[in-house]
Length: 89
Image 1 (cartoon, rainbow, N blue to C red):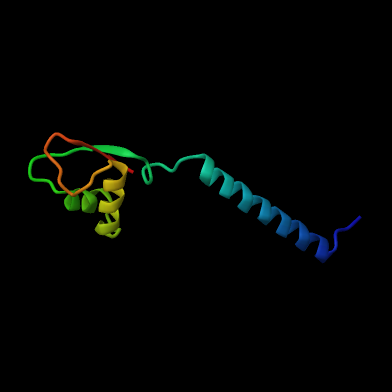
Image 2 (cartoon, rainbow, N blue to C red):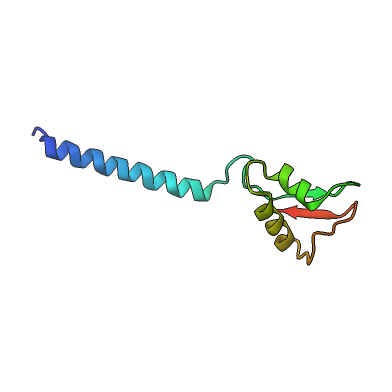
């Protein structure tokens, strides 16, 4: 039997919805390469938390990045020392 235009349109919409659902699932199930991966940073002499945030999160607001780094490392101030290892979420 021949498919009507309505049947083809429904099939197309169903296929599109399925592809979107699979893409959303895979986007959460498989980590992206590079972005979003937690990493560590060993503080070097002369570095500041602001500088690390600016370098570690280019294109984002350094204030928000500093806040995230402080929270992730349970810091009560922006004071850091050379040799300290920071978790960068």
